[in-house]
Image (tube, rainbow over the protein chains, first blue to last red):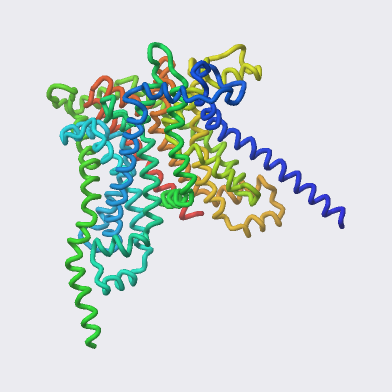
Length: 287
Length: 304
Protein backbone atom coordinates (compact mmCIF):
# COMPACT_ATOMS: atom_id res chain seq x y z
CA UNK A 1 0.00 0.00 0.00
CA UNK A 2 2.65 2.49 1.07
CA UNK A 3 4.77 1.31 -1.83
CA UNK A 4 2.03 2.19 -4.28
CA UNK A 5 1.45 5.66 -2.83
CA UNK A 6 5.18 6.28 -2.91
CA UNK A 7 5.22 5.20 -6.54
CA UNK A 8 2.33 7.49 -7.34
CA UNK A 9 3.94 10.39 -5.50
CA UNK A 10 7.14 9.87 -7.46
CA UNK A 11 5.24 9.72 -10.74
CA UNK A 12 3.38 12.92 -9.88
CA UNK A 13 6.63 14.63 -8.97
CA UNK A 14 8.14 13.55 -12.28
CA UNK A 15 5.10 14.86 -14.15
CA UNK A 16 5.25 18.15 -12.30
CA UNK A 17 8.94 18.46 -13.14
CA UNK A 18 8.45 17.84 -16.84
CA UNK A 19 5.52 20.25 -16.80
CA UNK A 20 7.62 23.03 -15.38
CA UNK A 21 10.58 22.22 -17.63
CA UNK A 22 8.27 22.75 -20.60
CA UNK A 23 6.98 25.85 -18.82
CA UNK A 24 10.51 27.21 -18.50
CA UNK A 25 11.09 26.74 -22.24
CA UNK A 26 7.83 28.56 -22.97
CA UNK A 27 8.75 31.40 -20.64
CA UNK A 28 12.15 31.76 -22.34
CA UNK A 29 10.58 31.90 -25.80
CA UNK A 30 7.99 34.53 -24.89
CA UNK A 31 10.02 36.59 -22.45
CA UNK A 32 13.60 36.47 -23.79
CA UNK A 33 13.06 38.97 -26.64
CA UNK A 34 11.81 41.54 -24.10
CA UNK A 35 14.59 40.86 -21.62
CA UNK A 36 17.40 40.90 -24.20
CA UNK A 37 16.10 44.11 -25.72
CA UNK A 38 15.79 45.82 -22.35
CA UNK A 39 19.32 44.82 -21.34
CA UNK A 40 20.81 45.74 -24.71
CA UNK A 41 19.24 49.17 -24.66
CA UNK A 42 21.36 50.10 -21.64
CA UNK A 43 24.70 49.33 -23.28
CA UNK A 44 27.20 52.15 -23.90
CA UNK A 45 27.42 53.60 -27.40
CA UNK A 46 30.56 51.65 -28.31
CA UNK A 47 28.63 48.39 -27.91
CA UNK A 48 25.23 49.15 -29.45
CA UNK A 49 26.23 47.80 -32.86
CA UNK A 50 27.46 44.52 -31.36
CA UNK A 51 25.19 41.49 -31.19
CA UNK A 52 23.71 40.77 -27.76
CA UNK A 53 25.29 37.31 -27.81
CA UNK A 54 26.98 35.89 -25.79
CA UNK A 55 24.82 37.27 -23.01
CA UNK A 56 27.27 39.15 -20.86
CA UNK A 57 24.82 41.18 -18.89
CA UNK A 58 25.38 44.89 -18.64
CA UNK A 59 29.10 45.57 -18.47
CA UNK A 60 28.54 49.25 -17.98
CA UNK A 61 25.14 50.82 -17.44
CA UNK A 62 24.53 53.64 -19.90
CA UNK A 63 21.64 55.60 -21.36
CA UNK A 64 23.55 56.42 -24.57
CA UNK A 65 20.95 54.65 -26.70
CA UNK A 66 18.19 56.82 -25.26
CA UNK A 67 20.28 59.95 -25.87
CA UNK A 68 20.78 58.93 -29.50
CA UNK A 69 17.07 58.24 -29.83
CA UNK A 70 16.45 61.78 -28.66
CA UNK A 71 18.33 63.14 -31.70
CA UNK A 72 15.74 61.75 -34.12
CA UNK A 73 12.76 63.77 -35.29
CA UNK A 74 11.79 66.46 -32.83
CA UNK A 75 13.17 64.61 -29.82
CA UNK A 76 11.79 61.57 -28.08
CA UNK A 77 9.84 63.54 -25.44
CA UNK A 78 8.02 65.42 -28.16
CA UNK A 79 6.94 62.23 -29.94
CA UNK A 80 6.09 60.50 -26.69
CA UNK A 81 3.89 63.47 -25.93
CA UNK A 82 2.23 63.15 -29.37
CA UNK A 83 1.50 59.48 -28.76
CA UNK A 84 0.29 60.16 -25.25
CA UNK A 85 -1.98 63.03 -26.26
CA UNK A 86 -3.53 60.95 -29.06
CA UNK A 87 -4.00 57.93 -26.78
CA UNK A 88 -5.43 59.85 -23.83
CA UNK A 89 -7.74 61.89 -26.07
CA UNK A 90 -8.89 58.67 -27.73
CA UNK A 91 -9.61 57.16 -24.32
CA UNK A 92 -11.55 60.19 -23.06
CA UNK A 93 -13.62 60.65 -26.20
CA UNK A 94 -14.28 56.93 -26.64
CA UNK A 95 -15.44 56.58 -23.05
CA UNK A 96 -17.65 59.69 -23.22
CA UNK A 97 -19.26 58.84 -26.54
CA UNK A 98 -19.77 55.14 -25.88
CA UNK A 99 -21.11 55.90 -22.40
CA UNK A 100 -23.80 58.13 -23.87
CA UNK A 101 -24.55 55.76 -26.74
CA UNK A 102 -24.61 52.70 -24.50
CA UNK A 103 -27.04 54.46 -22.17
CA UNK A 104 -29.23 55.60 -25.05
CA UNK A 105 -29.37 52.15 -26.61
CA UNK A 106 -29.99 50.43 -23.31
CA UNK A 107 -32.65 52.71 -21.80
CA UNK A 108 -34.54 54.51 -24.54
CA UNK A 109 -36.80 53.54 -27.36
CA UNK A 110 -36.58 55.52 -30.54
CA UNK A 111 -37.15 55.02 -34.27
CA UNK A 112 -34.54 52.95 -36.16
CA UNK A 113 -32.89 51.94 -32.90
CA UNK A 114 -31.87 48.47 -34.07
CA UNK A 115 -30.80 49.67 -37.50
CA UNK A 116 -28.54 52.28 -35.94
CA UNK A 117 -27.08 49.79 -33.48
CA UNK A 118 -26.33 47.34 -36.27
CA UNK A 119 -24.83 50.18 -38.31
CA UNK A 120 -22.31 50.86 -35.56
CA UNK A 121 -21.49 47.18 -34.99
CA UNK A 122 -21.33 46.41 -38.72
CA UNK A 123 -18.37 48.73 -39.20
CA UNK A 124 -16.38 45.89 -37.64
CA UNK A 125 -16.90 43.89 -40.81
CA UNK A 126 -15.21 46.49 -42.95
CA UNK A 127 -11.43 46.85 -42.66
CA UNK A 128 -10.49 50.48 -42.08
CA UNK A 129 -7.45 49.92 -44.28
CA UNK A 130 -9.81 49.91 -47.25
CA UNK A 131 -11.31 53.33 -46.51
CA UNK A 132 -8.09 55.12 -45.63
CA UNK A 133 -7.69 56.81 -49.02
CA UNK A 134 -10.99 58.75 -48.87
CA UNK A 135 -10.51 59.29 -45.15
CA UNK A 136 -7.30 61.07 -46.06
CA UNK A 137 -9.23 63.33 -48.48
CA UNK A 138 -12.18 63.95 -46.13
CA UNK A 139 -9.83 64.91 -43.32
CA UNK A 140 -8.03 67.38 -45.54
CA UNK A 141 -11.38 68.92 -46.57
CA UNK A 142 -12.18 69.33 -42.88
CA UNK A 143 -8.77 70.91 -42.36
CA UNK A 144 -7.79 67.96 -40.19
CA UNK A 145 -5.09 66.45 -42.38
CA UNK A 146 -1.73 65.97 -40.74
CA UNK A 147 -3.33 66.71 -37.39
CA UNK A 148 -3.34 64.74 -34.17
CA UNK A 149 -7.00 65.66 -33.65
CA UNK A 150 -7.95 64.13 -37.00
CA UNK A 151 -6.03 60.95 -36.15
CA UNK A 152 -7.73 60.84 -32.74
CA UNK A 153 -11.20 61.10 -34.28
CA UNK A 154 -10.38 58.23 -36.63
CA UNK A 155 -9.18 56.12 -33.70
CA UNK A 156 -12.31 56.92 -31.69
CA UNK A 157 -14.48 55.84 -34.62
CA UNK A 158 -12.56 52.57 -34.89
CA UNK A 159 -13.10 51.92 -31.17
CA UNK A 160 -16.84 52.61 -31.24
CA UNK A 161 -18.30 49.23 -32.29
CA UNK A 162 -16.56 47.37 -29.47
CA UNK A 163 -17.07 50.16 -26.94
CA UNK A 164 -20.75 50.84 -27.64
CA UNK A 165 -21.41 47.10 -27.50
CA UNK A 166 -19.60 46.85 -24.14
CA UNK A 167 -21.36 49.87 -22.64
CA UNK A 168 -24.80 48.78 -23.78
CA UNK A 169 -24.25 45.43 -22.06
CA UNK A 170 -22.97 47.20 -18.96
CA UNK A 171 -26.10 49.36 -18.73
CA UNK A 172 -28.36 46.40 -19.49
CA UNK A 173 -26.92 44.72 -16.39
CA UNK A 174 -27.89 47.63 -14.12
CA UNK A 175 -31.36 47.06 -12.57
CA UNK A 176 -33.93 49.66 -13.66
CA UNK A 177 -35.09 50.08 -10.04
CA UNK A 178 -31.89 51.91 -9.11
CA UNK A 179 -32.64 54.47 -11.77
CA UNK A 180 -36.26 54.83 -10.73
CA UNK A 181 -35.18 55.44 -7.15
CA UNK A 182 -32.66 58.05 -8.24
CA UNK A 183 -35.28 59.77 -10.38
CA UNK A 184 -37.59 60.02 -7.39
CA UNK A 185 -34.69 61.60 -5.52
CA UNK A 186 -34.57 64.21 -8.25
CA UNK A 187 -31.62 63.09 -10.34
CA UNK A 188 -32.13 63.79 -14.03
CA UNK A 189 -30.51 62.86 -17.31
CA UNK A 190 -26.78 63.61 -17.41
CA UNK A 191 -26.64 64.12 -13.65
CA UNK A 192 -28.22 60.72 -13.16
CA UNK A 193 -25.79 59.19 -15.64
CA UNK A 194 -22.72 60.80 -14.10
CA UNK A 195 -23.51 60.46 -10.39
CA UNK A 196 -25.64 57.34 -10.07
CA UNK A 197 -24.99 55.10 -13.06
CA UNK A 198 -21.33 55.84 -13.83
CA UNK A 199 -19.99 54.09 -10.71
CA UNK A 200 -22.16 51.07 -11.53
CA UNK A 201 -20.79 50.66 -15.06
CA UNK A 202 -17.23 51.58 -14.08
CA UNK A 203 -15.80 48.10 -14.80
CA UNK A 204 -17.11 48.36 -18.35
CA UNK A 205 -15.65 51.85 -18.66
CA UNK A 206 -12.22 50.59 -17.54
CA UNK A 207 -12.34 47.81 -20.13
CA UNK A 208 -13.30 50.24 -22.89
CA UNK A 209 -10.55 52.62 -21.79
CA UNK A 210 -7.82 49.95 -21.79
CA UNK A 211 -8.62 48.81 -25.31
CA UNK A 212 -8.88 52.39 -26.57
CA UNK A 213 -5.51 53.24 -25.03
CA UNK A 214 -3.64 50.18 -26.31
CA UNK A 215 -5.06 50.41 -29.81
CA UNK A 216 -4.37 54.14 -30.14
CA UNK A 217 -0.88 53.86 -28.64
CA UNK A 218 0.09 50.96 -30.91
CA UNK A 219 -1.65 51.90 -34.15
CA UNK A 220 0.74 52.30 -37.05
CA UNK A 221 -0.91 52.19 -40.50
CA UNK A 222 -3.36 55.10 -40.16
CA UNK A 223 -0.73 57.22 -38.41
CA UNK A 224 1.75 56.51 -41.21
CA UNK A 225 -0.74 57.59 -43.85
CA UNK A 226 -2.46 60.50 -42.11
CA UNK A 227 0.52 62.24 -40.50
CA UNK A 228 2.85 63.82 -43.01
CA UNK A 229 5.08 66.22 -41.13
CA UNK A 230 7.90 65.13 -38.92
CA UNK A 231 6.90 66.96 -35.75
CA UNK A 232 3.43 65.31 -35.73
CA UNK A 233 4.73 61.72 -35.79
CA UNK A 234 3.54 59.34 -33.11
CA UNK A 235 6.09 56.87 -31.73
CA UNK A 236 5.53 53.98 -34.18
CA UNK A 237 5.92 56.32 -37.18
CA UNK A 238 8.99 57.98 -35.67
CA UNK A 239 10.52 54.55 -35.12
CA UNK A 240 10.25 53.57 -38.78
CA UNK A 241 12.29 56.68 -39.51
CA UNK A 242 14.84 55.53 -36.93
CA UNK A 243 14.82 52.03 -38.37
CA UNK A 244 15.45 53.21 -41.92
CA UNK A 245 19.11 54.05 -41.95
CA UNK A 246 20.62 57.47 -41.43
CA UNK A 247 23.66 57.93 -43.66
CA UNK A 248 23.82 54.25 -44.48
CA UNK A 249 23.91 52.90 -40.95
CA UNK A 250 21.00 51.94 -38.73
CA UNK A 251 21.48 52.93 -35.12
CA UNK A 252 20.30 49.75 -33.44
CA UNK A 253 20.76 51.24 -29.99
CA UNK A 254 18.13 53.86 -30.80
CA UNK A 255 15.82 51.16 -32.17
CA UNK A 256 16.13 49.16 -28.94
CA UNK A 257 15.55 52.21 -26.79
CA UNK A 258 12.54 53.24 -28.88
CA UNK A 259 10.96 49.81 -28.65
CA UNK A 260 11.43 49.88 -24.86
CA UNK A 261 9.67 53.25 -24.73
CA UNK A 262 6.78 51.94 -26.85
CA UNK A 263 6.41 48.61 -25.06
CA UNK A 264 6.64 49.56 -21.37
CA UNK A 265 3.31 51.47 -21.14
CA UNK A 266 1.44 48.58 -22.81
CA UNK A 267 2.90 46.00 -20.46
CA UNK A 268 2.18 48.18 -17.41
CA UNK A 269 -1.43 48.84 -18.41
CA UNK A 270 -1.97 45.15 -19.09
CA UNK A 271 -0.32 43.87 -15.93
CA UNK A 272 -2.10 46.36 -13.67
CA UNK A 273 -5.55 45.95 -15.24
CA UNK A 274 -5.36 42.36 -16.51
CA UNK A 275 -8.76 41.42 -15.07
CA UNK A 276 -10.57 44.13 -17.03
CA UNK A 277 -8.58 43.39 -20.18
CA UNK A 278 -9.51 39.70 -20.14
CA UNK A 279 -13.17 40.55 -19.52
CA UNK A 280 -13.17 42.74 -22.62
CA UNK A 281 -11.46 40.03 -24.63
CA UNK A 282 -14.10 37.49 -23.63
CA UNK A 283 -16.95 39.91 -24.38
CA UNK A 284 -15.43 40.76 -27.72
CA UNK A 285 -14.81 37.12 -28.54
CA UNK A 286 -18.29 35.94 -27.65
CA UNK A 287 -19.82 38.57 -29.89
CA UNK B 1 -57.07 52.57 -8.81
CA UNK B 2 -55.71 56.07 -8.43
CA UNK B 3 -52.19 54.87 -7.82
CA UNK B 4 -52.31 52.98 -11.06
CA UNK B 5 -53.24 56.05 -13.02
CA UNK B 6 -50.52 58.07 -11.36
CA UNK B 7 -47.87 55.48 -12.08
CA UNK B 8 -48.86 55.01 -15.70
CA UNK B 9 -49.12 58.56 -16.94
CA UNK B 10 -45.57 59.82 -16.30
CA UNK B 11 -44.17 56.68 -17.87
CA UNK B 12 -46.08 57.31 -21.02
CA UNK B 13 -45.01 60.92 -21.17
CA UNK B 14 -41.42 59.94 -20.72
CA UNK B 15 -41.60 57.40 -23.51
CA UNK B 16 -42.94 59.97 -25.93
CA UNK B 17 -40.20 62.43 -25.08
CA UNK B 18 -37.72 59.57 -24.90
CA UNK B 19 -37.76 59.18 -28.66
CA UNK B 20 -35.77 62.36 -29.12
CA UNK B 21 -33.78 62.02 -25.96
CA UNK B 22 -32.58 58.54 -26.92
CA UNK B 23 -31.48 59.79 -30.31
CA UNK B 24 -29.65 62.66 -28.64
CA UNK B 25 -27.66 60.19 -26.54
CA UNK B 26 -26.49 58.18 -29.50
CA UNK B 27 -26.04 61.18 -31.82
CA UNK B 28 -22.27 61.69 -31.22
CA UNK B 29 -21.55 58.03 -31.97
CA UNK B 30 -23.71 58.07 -35.10
CA UNK B 31 -22.12 61.33 -36.25
CA UNK B 32 -18.59 59.91 -35.97
CA UNK B 33 -19.50 56.65 -37.67
CA UNK B 34 -21.19 58.59 -40.47
CA UNK B 35 -18.39 61.08 -41.08
CA UNK B 36 -15.44 58.76 -40.59
CA UNK B 37 -16.87 55.48 -41.81
CA UNK B 38 -20.01 55.58 -43.92
CA UNK B 39 -18.99 58.63 -45.96
CA UNK B 40 -15.47 57.35 -46.69
CA UNK B 41 -16.97 54.02 -47.64
CA UNK B 42 -19.32 55.57 -50.21
CA UNK B 43 -16.51 57.87 -51.28
CA UNK B 44 -14.27 54.84 -51.93
CA UNK B 45 -16.81 53.47 -54.40
CA UNK B 46 -17.08 56.89 -56.08
CA UNK B 47 -13.31 57.33 -56.28
CA UNK B 48 -12.79 53.87 -57.69
CA UNK B 49 -14.70 54.98 -60.80
CA UNK B 50 -12.31 57.86 -61.45
CA UNK B 51 -8.77 58.53 -62.43
CA UNK B 52 -7.93 60.48 -59.30
CA UNK B 53 -4.50 62.10 -59.07
CA UNK B 54 -3.30 63.89 -55.95
CA UNK B 55 -3.15 67.23 -57.77
CA UNK B 56 -5.54 68.25 -60.54
CA UNK B 57 -9.14 67.26 -61.02
CA UNK B 58 -10.43 63.69 -61.08
CA UNK B 59 -11.76 62.28 -64.31
CA UNK B 60 -14.60 59.76 -64.67
CA UNK B 61 -13.37 56.52 -66.25
CA UNK B 62 -16.21 54.15 -65.32
CA UNK B 63 -14.93 50.67 -64.55
CA UNK B 64 -11.51 51.48 -66.02
CA UNK B 65 -9.77 50.93 -62.69
CA UNK B 66 -11.41 47.53 -62.30
CA UNK B 67 -10.38 46.30 -65.75
CA UNK B 68 -6.90 47.57 -64.99
CA UNK B 69 -6.96 45.62 -61.73
CA UNK B 70 -7.92 42.35 -63.42
CA UNK B 71 -5.06 42.78 -65.88
CA UNK B 72 -2.53 43.85 -63.25
CA UNK B 73 -0.14 40.98 -62.54
CA UNK B 74 1.21 42.77 -59.46
CA UNK B 75 -2.29 42.82 -57.95
CA UNK B 76 -2.63 39.06 -58.44
CA UNK B 77 0.87 38.50 -57.07
CA UNK B 78 0.05 40.50 -53.94
CA UNK B 79 -3.19 38.57 -53.54
CA UNK B 80 -1.32 35.29 -53.96
CA UNK B 81 1.32 36.31 -51.45
CA UNK B 82 -1.35 37.40 -48.95
CA UNK B 83 -3.09 34.03 -49.35
CA UNK B 84 0.18 32.15 -48.88
CA UNK B 85 1.05 34.18 -45.79
CA UNK B 86 -2.44 33.78 -44.31
CA UNK B 87 -2.38 30.03 -44.80
CA UNK B 88 1.08 29.47 -43.34
CA UNK B 89 0.76 31.84 -40.42
CA UNK B 90 -2.67 30.53 -39.41
CA UNK B 91 -1.43 26.94 -39.40
CA UNK B 92 1.66 27.99 -37.44
CA UNK B 93 -0.38 29.92 -34.87
CA UNK B 94 -2.76 27.01 -34.30
CA UNK B 95 0.10 24.51 -34.13
CA UNK B 96 1.51 26.42 -31.17
CA UNK B 97 -1.65 27.85 -29.60
CA UNK B 98 -3.43 24.51 -29.25
CA UNK B 99 -0.72 22.81 -27.17
CA UNK B 100 -0.36 26.04 -25.17
CA UNK B 101 -4.10 26.07 -24.43
CA UNK B 102 -3.86 22.51 -23.08
CA UNK B 103 -0.75 23.50 -21.17
CA UNK B 104 -2.38 26.41 -19.35
CA UNK B 105 -5.62 24.48 -18.79
CA UNK B 106 -3.84 22.20 -16.31
CA UNK B 107 -4.61 22.92 -12.65
CA UNK B 108 -0.99 23.33 -11.64
CA UNK B 109 1.15 25.77 -9.76
CA UNK B 110 2.19 28.98 -11.60
CA UNK B 111 -0.33 28.31 -14.35
CA UNK B 112 -1.74 31.84 -14.24
CA UNK B 113 1.83 33.15 -14.38
CA UNK B 114 2.43 31.11 -17.54
CA UNK B 115 -0.78 32.47 -19.05
CA UNK B 116 0.23 36.05 -18.36
CA UNK B 117 3.73 35.62 -19.79
CA UNK B 118 2.49 33.92 -22.95
CA UNK B 119 -0.01 36.74 -23.38
CA UNK B 120 2.47 39.61 -22.93
CA UNK B 121 3.44 39.99 -26.63
CA UNK B 122 -0.25 40.32 -27.53
CA UNK B 123 -0.62 43.69 -25.82
CA UNK B 124 2.35 45.36 -27.52
CA UNK B 125 1.97 46.84 -30.99
CA UNK B 126 2.69 44.88 -34.13
CA UNK B 127 4.98 47.74 -35.14
CA UNK B 128 6.94 47.40 -31.87
CA UNK B 129 7.16 43.64 -32.31
CA UNK B 130 8.37 44.05 -35.90
CA UNK B 131 11.05 46.53 -34.83
CA UNK B 132 12.18 44.25 -32.03
CA UNK B 133 12.44 41.23 -34.32
CA UNK B 134 14.06 43.04 -37.21
CA UNK B 135 16.84 43.85 -34.78
CA UNK B 136 17.03 40.26 -33.48
CA UNK B 137 17.25 39.03 -37.09
CA UNK B 138 19.86 41.57 -38.17
CA UNK B 139 23.01 39.90 -39.42
CA UNK B 140 25.58 42.16 -37.75
CA UNK B 141 23.92 43.39 -34.57
CA UNK B 142 21.16 40.85 -33.98
CA UNK B 143 20.78 37.77 -31.82
CA UNK B 144 19.94 34.98 -34.24
CA UNK B 145 22.94 34.93 -36.56
CA UNK B 146 25.60 34.48 -33.83
CA UNK B 147 23.40 31.96 -31.99
CA UNK B 148 22.79 29.93 -35.14
CA UNK B 149 26.48 30.04 -35.93
CA UNK B 150 27.37 28.84 -32.46
CA UNK B 151 24.83 26.00 -32.68
CA UNK B 152 26.38 25.02 -36.00
CA UNK B 153 23.14 25.58 -37.93
CA UNK B 154 24.75 27.97 -40.38
CA UNK B 155 28.22 28.30 -41.82
CA UNK B 156 29.32 31.74 -40.67
CA UNK B 157 26.78 34.45 -40.19
CA UNK B 158 23.79 34.47 -42.48
CA UNK B 159 21.49 37.35 -43.22
CA UNK B 160 18.07 35.94 -42.43
CA UNK B 161 16.23 38.78 -44.12
CA UNK B 162 18.16 38.56 -47.41
CA UNK B 163 16.37 35.60 -48.99
CA UNK B 164 12.65 35.11 -49.35
CA UNK B 165 12.39 31.80 -47.52
CA UNK B 166 14.32 32.75 -44.40
CA UNK B 167 12.76 36.21 -44.23
CA UNK B 168 9.30 34.68 -44.59
CA UNK B 169 10.10 32.19 -41.84
CA UNK B 170 11.41 34.94 -39.57
CA UNK B 171 8.21 36.93 -39.99
CA UNK B 172 6.08 33.84 -39.35
CA UNK B 173 7.96 33.14 -36.11
CA UNK B 174 7.61 36.78 -35.07
CA UNK B 175 3.85 36.78 -35.68
CA UNK B 176 3.41 33.47 -33.88
CA UNK B 177 5.33 34.90 -30.91
CA UNK B 178 3.11 37.98 -31.00
CA UNK B 179 -0.30 36.34 -31.56
CA UNK B 180 -0.17 32.78 -30.16
CA UNK B 181 -1.20 34.00 -26.68
CA UNK B 182 -4.36 35.55 -28.06
CA UNK B 183 -5.43 32.40 -29.92
CA UNK B 184 -4.49 30.38 -26.85
CA UNK B 185 -6.87 32.36 -24.62
CA UNK B 186 -9.71 31.98 -27.13
CA UNK B 187 -9.12 28.22 -27.35
CA UNK B 188 -8.82 28.03 -23.55
CA UNK B 189 -12.34 29.43 -23.12
CA UNK B 190 -13.52 26.64 -25.43
CA UNK B 191 -11.63 23.99 -23.48
CA UNK B 192 -13.04 25.24 -20.20
CA UNK B 193 -16.53 25.10 -21.64
CA UNK B 194 -16.30 21.33 -22.00
CA UNK B 195 -17.96 19.71 -18.99
CA UNK B 196 -15.36 17.74 -17.04
CA UNK B 197 -17.91 14.90 -16.49
CA UNK B 198 -17.73 14.17 -20.23
CA UNK B 199 -13.95 13.88 -20.27
CA UNK B 200 -14.09 11.82 -17.09
CA UNK B 201 -16.71 9.47 -18.58
CA UNK B 202 -14.64 9.02 -21.74
CA UNK B 203 -11.57 8.28 -19.63
CA UNK B 204 -13.46 5.66 -17.64
CA UNK B 205 -14.70 4.12 -20.89
CA UNK B 206 -11.07 3.62 -21.79
CA UNK B 207 -10.58 6.35 -24.39
CA UNK B 208 -6.95 7.33 -24.77
CA UNK B 209 -5.71 10.90 -24.80
CA UNK B 210 -5.68 11.13 -28.60
CA UNK B 211 -9.15 9.55 -28.89
CA UNK B 212 -10.53 11.96 -26.32
CA UNK B 213 -9.03 14.87 -28.25
CA UNK B 214 -10.25 13.63 -31.61
CA UNK B 215 -13.80 12.58 -30.71
CA UNK B 216 -14.64 14.76 -27.74
CA UNK B 217 -12.56 17.92 -27.53
CA UNK B 218 -12.45 18.82 -31.22
CA UNK B 219 -16.19 18.45 -31.93
CA UNK B 220 -17.14 20.33 -28.77
CA UNK B 221 -14.78 23.15 -29.63
CA UNK B 222 -15.98 23.67 -33.16
CA UNK B 223 -17.49 27.06 -32.42
CA UNK B 224 -14.45 28.36 -30.55
CA UNK B 225 -12.11 27.12 -33.24
CA UNK B 226 -14.20 28.74 -35.95
CA UNK B 227 -13.94 32.00 -34.05
CA UNK B 228 -10.16 31.74 -33.53
CA UNK B 229 -9.74 30.73 -37.15
CA UNK B 230 -11.71 33.68 -38.49
CA UNK B 231 -9.89 36.17 -36.27
CA UNK B 232 -6.56 34.80 -37.41
CA UNK B 233 -7.50 34.76 -41.11
CA UNK B 234 -8.97 38.27 -41.21
CA UNK B 235 -6.03 39.62 -39.22
CA UNK B 236 -3.52 38.00 -41.57
CA UNK B 237 -5.20 39.22 -44.75
CA UNK B 238 -4.80 42.78 -43.48
CA UNK B 239 -1.11 42.31 -42.64
CA UNK B 240 1.04 45.31 -43.40
CA UNK B 241 3.24 46.48 -40.49
CA UNK B 242 5.53 43.46 -40.43
CA UNK B 243 6.31 43.57 -44.16
CA UNK B 244 6.74 47.33 -44.22
CA UNK B 245 8.99 47.45 -41.17
CA UNK B 246 10.91 44.19 -41.37
CA UNK B 247 11.61 43.74 -45.08
CA UNK B 248 10.24 46.87 -46.81
CA UNK B 249 8.38 44.48 -49.09
CA UNK B 250 11.59 42.72 -50.13
CA UNK B 251 13.53 40.60 -51.00
CA UNK B 252 12.90 41.24 -54.72
CA UNK B 253 9.58 42.90 -53.82
CA UNK B 254 8.15 39.47 -53.11
CA UNK B 255 6.56 40.41 -49.78
CA UNK B 256 3.98 42.92 -50.93
CA UNK B 257 0.70 42.03 -49.22
CA UNK B 258 -2.58 43.35 -50.56
CA UNK B 259 -2.76 46.18 -48.01
CA UNK B 260 0.86 47.03 -48.82
CA UNK B 261 0.00 47.17 -52.53
CA UNK B 262 -2.94 49.51 -51.82
CA UNK B 263 -0.60 51.65 -49.75
CA UNK B 264 1.93 51.79 -52.59
CA UNK B 265 -0.64 52.66 -55.22
CA UNK B 266 -2.47 55.26 -53.12
CA UNK B 267 0.25 56.91 -51.09
CA UNK B 268 3.49 56.27 -52.96
CA UNK B 269 2.39 56.46 -56.61
CA UNK B 270 -0.68 58.58 -55.72
CA UNK B 271 -3.02 56.63 -58.02
CA UNK B 272 -5.84 57.34 -55.57
CA UNK B 273 -8.59 56.09 -57.90
CA UNK B 274 -6.83 52.82 -58.57
CA UNK B 275 -6.05 52.47 -54.87
CA UNK B 276 -9.78 52.87 -54.16
CA UNK B 277 -10.64 50.11 -56.65
CA UNK B 278 -8.11 47.83 -54.95
CA UNK B 279 -9.67 48.75 -51.60
CA UNK B 280 -13.08 47.70 -52.87
CA UNK B 281 -11.59 44.34 -53.87
CA UNK B 282 -10.15 43.92 -50.37
CA UNK B 283 -13.46 44.96 -48.86
CA UNK B 284 -15.41 42.42 -50.91
CA UNK B 285 -13.03 39.67 -49.82
CA UNK B 286 -13.43 40.57 -46.15
CA UNK B 287 -17.19 40.99 -46.24
CA UNK B 288 -17.42 37.58 -47.94
CA UNK B 289 -15.27 36.18 -45.14
CA UNK B 290 -17.52 37.78 -42.52
CA UNK B 291 -20.52 36.08 -44.08
CA UNK B 292 -18.67 32.76 -44.00
CA UNK B 293 -17.84 33.55 -40.37
CA UNK B 294 -21.47 34.08 -39.41
CA UNK B 295 -22.37 30.88 -41.20
CA UNK B 296 -19.58 28.91 -39.52
CA UNK B 297 -20.59 30.15 -36.08
CA UNK B 298 -24.21 29.27 -36.78
CA UNK B 299 -23.26 25.80 -37.90
CA UNK B 300 -21.35 25.48 -34.64
CA UNK B 301 -24.51 26.39 -32.76
CA UNK B 302 -26.71 23.87 -34.53
CA UNK B 303 -24.49 20.88 -33.90
CA UNK B 304 -22.17 21.58 -31.03
